[in-house]
Image (cartoon, helix red, strand yellow):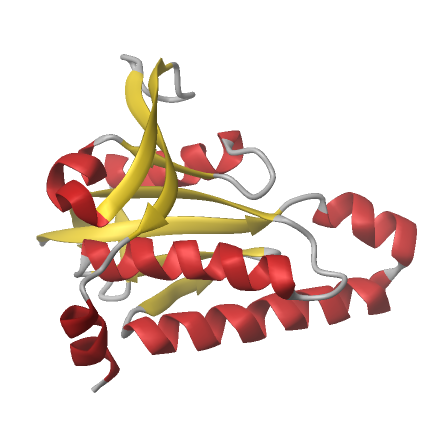
Length: 175
């Protein structure tokens, strides 16, 4: 079955090197802190972690604004955590196939993962379609068309800087 969903992939940048330099116990502590913050943020926005991916996660939502707002908040909160590694994120929205009841497959999911891979430390890259859908709720810098591994044509990309979800929507999500 095809459904419309918003996706974000988030990843701890430099986790492998950190683990090598600081050991497994330090890595466990950093990962525990990241997951604690992420759980808090997605709960606050009424969205969910679709799956954990080692030092990262796939976040999924039926509400694009809630997802973008959550990713922006996640980046802000992780900057405040002492000793935390920077994170990077990729965001997309579109039709996907629900696979085996609890997973998603399709170009939309793949693009979010690839954008996360291309993002720099503390950067949120997104498909430009989110700006078209969210309008002035999102502040984004156009980055132009980029070649993305696995995609035949270059993809129009933006850097998400901020999200302005109206207070009434934010309050409704918390209920």
